[in-house]
Image (cartoon, rainbow, N blue to C red):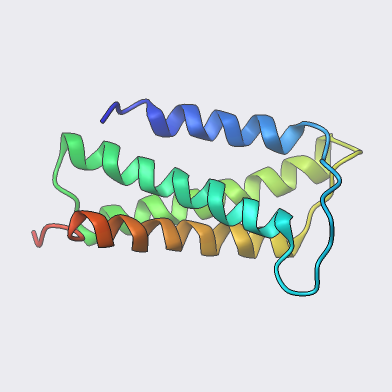
Length: 119
């Protein structure tokens, strides 16, 4: 696993976050926008965990740092949108979706990679 994949994915998220917002249809259950947030932040955590595991053993502490960093990155993207891009908006729903996506990335990683080592 290339260790720079999560960095490239984070840059991809940045590009999506500062670009013009697509007009996605609204639904009553899951909005496509929130599902997209779940997906991109889940992938970010999954890639970061795989990259770290390829270099060193994962511990619960490292996993929590990676998941928290991803969620904070999502919050930062929302703040940047509100502050610097008048055509973008801060949405608490997006922050929640980013955080839940980060946690889901960890869960999926754990399922496919047997969790973490117990150091």
